[in-house]
Image: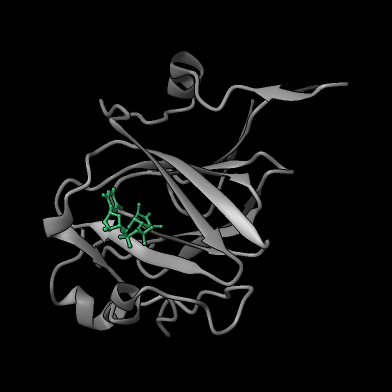
Amino acid sequence: MNVIETALPGVLIIEPKVFGDARGFFLETFHKQRYAEAGIPGDGLEFVQDNHSRSRKGVLRGLHFQLENPQGKLVSAGTGTVFDVAADVNPDSPTFGQWVGVELSEENHRQLWIPPGYAHGFCVLSDVADFQYKCTALYHPQSDSGVAWDDPDLAITWPINNPLLSEKDKALPRLSAAKRDRLP
Ligand SMILES: Cc1cn([C@H]2C[C@H](O)[C@@H](COP(=O)(O)OP(=O)(O)O[C@H]3O[C@H](C)C(=O)[C@H](O)[C@H]3O)O2)c(=O)[nH]c1=O
């Protein structure tokens, strides 16, 4: 497998080895030893929850993080194509306000590793996308938090306009407002 560093410390693009043949393809989507050698999940963490969401074209989920029990996430698109974003929303971080975006798809089989403490979101570019991911902490709704997808300080260049958002995501605060509530 190929591991590519990004501009955000610890955020890694993984390109698994794909075995294609006349039937289709096979790939390992996780391998404890090989991923540990790449520092995933690292820091004594382990994956404890797997998630799967299906979204139609134009949906945007994010930007989310958990204030307590922050989750590291190993994400990919099993079907379809998404634009996936990790953003640094920690005001004490030297890369505060920076973000990285990567296209994940059933064609490129790419994964993105997002360590705990970053905000995460994605938008759907295909007719439908099945988004699967492993998390290093359990869902903790009491500390579910986030920042607005279109925050002007982050200025994420999403490849879609007028996304379909949940009511929760429509109400997410701007980074400057959220900062006063001490982000992760
Ligand atoms: C995240 C989660 C949600 N739920 C329930 C709570 C709601 O009744 C329903 C939908 O939840 P929500 O609208 O928060 O789902 P997403 O908008 O996809 O949230 C996720 O989207 C972004 C991209 C993320 O990185 C996080 O994993 C997560 O915040 O599933 C659970 O039961 N367990 C869970 O772990």
